[in-house]
Length: 259
Ligand code: PMM
Image 1 (spheres, rainbow, N blue to C red):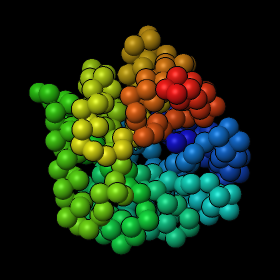
Image 2: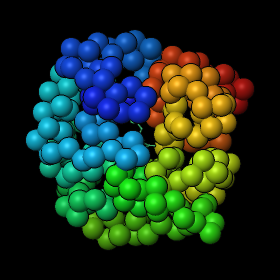
Image 3: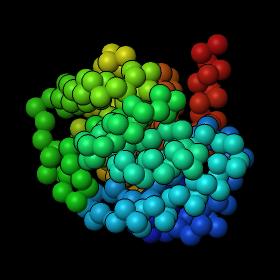
Image 4: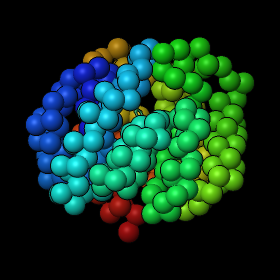
């Protein structure tokens, strides 16, 4: 899953694809490089980020999705807002990537339940980015994330969402310390026991900088590729990454080794 942040302020690529033309150019490069899904986001969720208005979010993402739908690539909308999800689906998105797993907007579940062809990424979340790091308190991060994701699944399926629609994501960097992120990555098999496909978004995140000596986001790329290799071997359903080609290559190696 290639990241297309149409934002001025995302932590790794904020501002790079902010205008419509650069966003489309970037998407075309990702398609050439073999991306399976393009995840279009209009609101930065980096720690400490302020929220933007729904109108601003809509103006950023809907024209891009409408244009990319023409290219026949699978599109995902990274949003916590049900009205944005609805508009993105109407414009051609078939995956809703909700970092709040339906907690931010009580109307989201209904939108997803009303269209069983839509896949729904349910990420582990403990509150909006502004002060989410205060919620990075766990006795056992793996058990608690697993239980909280399981609670979401129970609630969402009660609202009419089919289990086949759901993809789970541990929410690397969301209300998690560096140690929590590593603990979750090391125990991805325990999250897989919930019985759903797992998506992981670890690409270029700060915990990798902590390991490598506080490097810039771009300079965390090789470590991100190493993680993709590990996650592909572990049987993750997908990885959400800033670059495409090196991750595709890593996955090709793992697939060949599996034969
Ligand atoms: N991380 C970010 C944004 N959206 N979605 C999912 N499903 N999983 C993630 O880990 C995730 C996400 C923040 O990273 P970005 O600023 O690079 O988009």
